[in-house]
Amino acid sequence: QGQLVESGGGLVQAGGSLRLSCRFSRMITSVFNAGHMGWYRQAPGQQRELVASIPNRGAAKYADSVKERFTISRDNSRKTLYLNMNNLKPEDTAVYYCNKDPDTLDWGQGTQVTVSS
Image 1 (cartoon, rainbow, N blue to C red):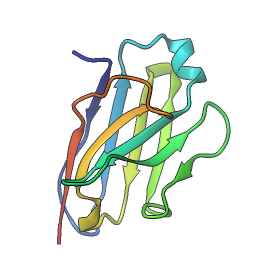
Image 2 (cartoon, helix red, strand yellow; image 1 turned 135 degrees about the horizontal axis):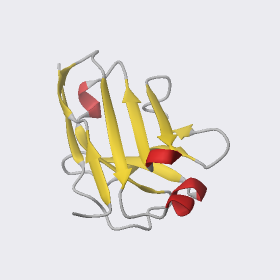
Image 3 (cartoon, one colour; image 1 turned 45 degrees about the vertical axis):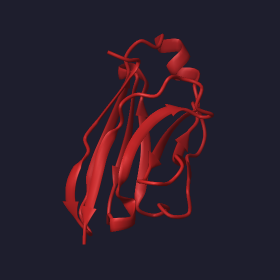
């Protein structure tokens, strides 16, 4: 099992919601707590892109395409990163990954999100 374990993806209709989770299983808690973390996605035929990031302190940042719809959060005690996705659109269909921001860790397997129209 790798260091990053993503879960929570699935098939949902447009307008629906999903909550993704990512556990940084092997990371030392203090390192996680201090880290700037992010959610990325890769659609078929496209490059992986950063969609949301959250520092250890301060405000999260979002790609324009997901602003007002996605919310990133973290539970430092569980070394877990979350992504709440609302009002999903077909163009959100992608494999979603977590990593540090910038992405310095080996990638996990990701979790597939498919939004049907």
